[in-house]
Length: 83
Image (cartoon, rainbow, N blue to C red; front, side, top):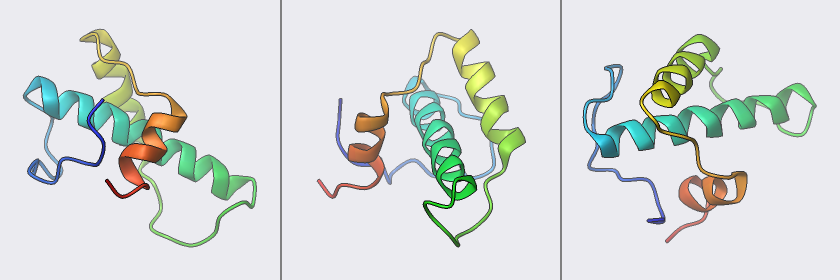
């Protein structure tokens, strides 16, 4: 798996189109739902609220197309750990 978020993808607010965009979107949706879970348990605070409906929509549609989110460890490496 490629490490680091692909910052060349600028599909803000639109549906993913390419396979790379779909995988990035599915990974991001899963990551932000996990971050929000941490907030709900009091492990993190602050930040912008997560759009649960959009995350769930991306995950559902992505799964129908064959995309699955990366593991939690891979998500942390992709979105938190600097390459």
